[in-house]
Length: 514
Image (cartoon, rainbow, N blue to C red; front, side, top):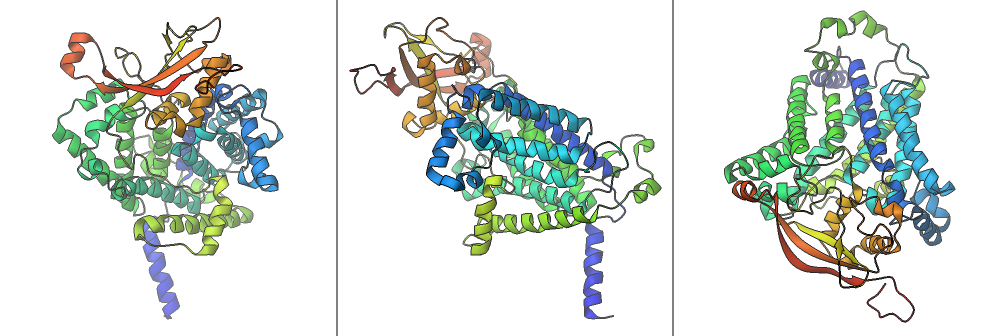
């Protein structure tokens, strides 16, 4: 036997050890695509209720103004730098319509109708909204949804009606596994690379539950756990994020262990914090670590496809095999170059690869991940009050972020109240570092109904206030004894002003006015 033949035999043997050649993924594909469609439905439905107040014509950061500034700065290059359908119009009807169409397409995907075409539409619509969402769609799960949704286009069958489907593309299955590996591995590596003392000392969870953006009441209980339990939980998290990704690229049993461990971590995060659809999307990605036999292990055998039926499924069309191969080569090349600097320190990808990455980055088909690289040790909260005369002040209440200490943290995921989330980030800096926040205050002073509906209450229903003042308070969870005695979930400690008192600038006003 020649050396080439021997090498081929060894590679084929290694492949068979990792991936059972008899394994089928038809049910896995169906489950994954429907789970992803439900995530899309949650994402579009959640944004639909907020989009006008966030980036509408009278919103905090109008999409039209953003695109005009982009075109003025980049000229003809604006279209490729910010790929979005909203170059043809950014009216409130267009923004709401995009969310409505996205929700309708997601429902069609759940029903299994024309999935290839539907997932292409879902990806294009979410990319369009993402690229005009500015600060309000700048979250890692928005990027993760775009990358996952892009790969789903190539995994989904391209047909107009249900029928005999071709076998799923193993190349795309592995790309989705690789995406999950990068998501989990980078999440662990960035915590270590940051040098944060709380992560390295395994004490981060002693503050995380109360300082995360939107805790739940279960997070309050988790905060009460003894320090030893918190440290053990942190160590378990590192084991899941740093070790289990290696099993995701292993044989069948190893992938099942990785699936179970990752699902356990996601379930824990779901219970203790509100991270919109992020955990649900990660759970959907866990499905591709399984095969049909593992997915239906607890179900009646009749649910399993017969071997003859599975073997009779047609192979992918040649054009689709070619497209899948090209996508696999592209994604692997770009993501390996992206992961290299984090793993190898001073590694720099070739300039040609870097240029390709820069050209494709606006389409968000490969992204950086890694939440909470540095733990936030305290929880500052911004409070906003308005006044008609500068003497008597009334407070604005947000829907979900902490305010009244007696109000318990609540469950809100998979919905994401994006203004409440941005308020958490704004509190970590000051108003000079958050121009969007100044625009938010302007809209309140103007009395824009689209923005006021994002809040839990409007203390000025008849006429907008003349003045606004903002302050910062430190919030901490109470202990069990305090809550039993007072009923309060939070302890509130005023820290000082966030911005000067502001008002809309009339003629001849002082410089402290807007």
